[in-house]
Image 1 (cartoon, each protein chain N blue to C red):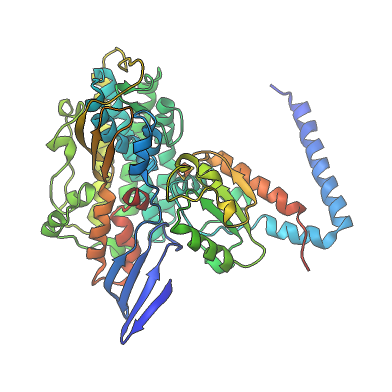
Image 2 (image 1 turned 120 degrees about the horizontal axis):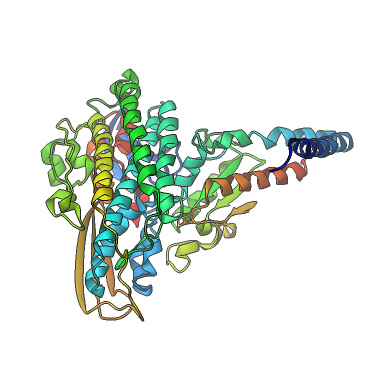
Length: 173
Length: 368
Ligand code: SF4
């Protein structure tokens, strides 16, 4: 058990760190900071399910895990307004060109998450004749989330990693 | 949706594989105004070659990838494989293991139906109905995870029994969950099944006549919603299902509304089955010890079981080696795909999501 006093001091320290970075960043590069901050907590995912990992994606949007807490919106939008592509599992030869089309149709800036062992490397189906061994061969990928299927907690961690990446990313003029 | 071609009054377009419903499937739909004239399904987006892969993996190594096709019903679809493999290997599971299998298969049936119900809510634009079953489903996932170890993919059934015994205190936890859930189902009936939105969208939509259902070879809840009391658990009892007393919910209307009712009633029956299985279970071993390289004897074996979506059928041919020579999987979802194109014709385009999901067509399973 942590005593409440030390818990408060840990919390205060964290807030201090966070405030420090915010102040530092917003003073040094205010535009980059504001633009990235705006993108960070409004990730619109595309609804493209490629295989069975979609079940855990659905569970993660449910009330127990509630992805929206972390600034990830529900996957109901149109492709043209989305900026995040979560590839939920195995990509077969038939799906691969469609995946590329979907990626090309999304407006910039866009990010890609490879969810599950199949999207990373082919996973369980690595020796199958019809499976692409990793989506990074066909589209640029930002975050890889391991698991078969990844638990919703792992998915959430992956999204937080992506947000960290967005926070540090350059803003193109 | 993209337009494929235009011919006079008819417009042909492609629905999927990216659309705001549930993914990995594509239909090529010809419409006349709002009415669907012709549907050409285009399956195969998730064809991962499961049958071929079985030929280069041993009987045990086959288990993880064979439960992936329907990941929410992983034990239910594995059941048939394990029964067929046991026949070839020549092992018999002890009685306790058989009851544990029934418990897991029925838990998975509930988990699968709950997932179905919640996505059905999304398809009708009823987001409360996504949240409620998704939340309650977690209780059953917790129960199944306390036995199988993971959230959805358990790899729990093995030839000769199950991987491990159920944990102490499972019974109390399960009964508590069931008591809660029975009450909850009553609320579902009120908020969901007596809801004007749901009634309007589903009642009389996609009516599947009894004769059509039989001739198209549809199985499972969809067949039972059309008035045929057919259930493999009753017709050809496998495992210990003949010692258990349960009913087969059947409806006569055959529309999307009764398909939802059948699944709701089935969840009640599943809980009844699990209660009985827990009581009937006696202490004992849960698996038959097997040593050395497991080989199947020369010959072939069949098994047919009732998974959440209908009849799951496995045909395994063995040449006496450590790998199966040929594995044929006959899945219920593929028949639902045939039924779907039959049902969609003549209906409105706006009813397509309800009919599609009402049939519980699971593309990953249909493509294997
Ligand atoms: S990683 Fe596992 S759960 Fe995800 S798509 Fe592949 S086989 Fe399915």
